[in-house]
Image (cartoon, rainbow, N blue to C red; front, side, top):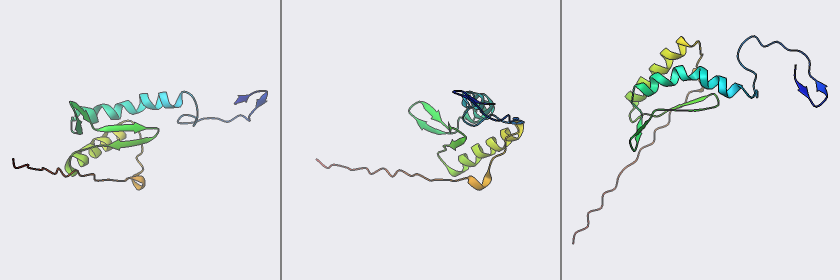
Length: 112
């Protein structure tokens, strides 16, 4: 039941998961998803930002994988697939997107 001011909601039973909007939900999800993040980071295959290797970002229930090549991205996706089975997490394959960002360096040679 939920209490707001002097009003009380009806009783409902949670059988799995966490309540959406609950104050503990993000913290509990962070603990839960950590078992997926560790092997991705251990692969050390993400994009380099200075001395740091960034391979995975999490926001709410979204997972963003960063990789310097398509084959590396496939490796990271495979790691996520294996780990998601271990933690009983279902990945919605209908909601996957891949974006390719490329940077072309222009080198200017000055003749003095």
